[in-house]
Image 1 (cartoon, rainbow over the protein chains, first blue to last red):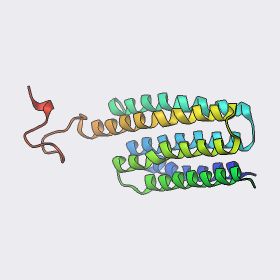
Image 2 (image 1 turned 180 degrees about the vertical axis):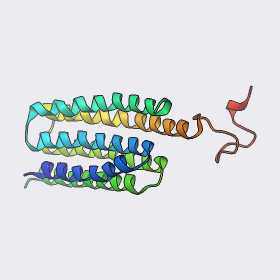
Image 3 (image 1 turned 120 degrees about the horizontal axis):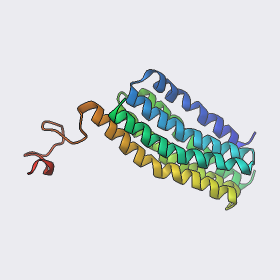
Image 4 (image 1 turned 180 degrees about the horizontal axis):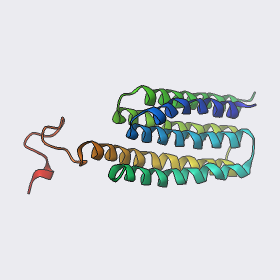
Length: 83
Length: 116
């Protein structure tokens, strides 16, 4: 287990407070926490790919980062108008 | 342990601390606007530090470029998402994102939007 894997695990701990906000907070606060979780998960995937030296898995965080942008905007727009 | 590994580990520790502090901030702050302030370090600063750590560890390789691409997407998307989120919160709260008479910080005599 190298530093990258340890950092990935430590960052995953950061999703716990955000998860509490998603589950218990108001709806817009939950959106903020969801965006934080998304960013953290992209970094975790990057760190795990580097930590385990698997080149093929670097495509997953790239794809998730692109989807994070699109889905976040759509989600927020729905919050603004309809939800 | 080489110098590269030490630099990478230090940068990773910094990134982890930023993420954990942001997560705690998102948990303890009271409303959406305050919580959004703590999203920015996790969405902007930490990805840059992680990218630098991978660059320090591996040098410039295909993997580093792909990592940079993913992190650049996050860094670009962060401000747009924050803006859209705060706009949505304001619209949900007041029905419009523009300032209203009596709002704190509104210029005396109205703003330029009020002029015919």
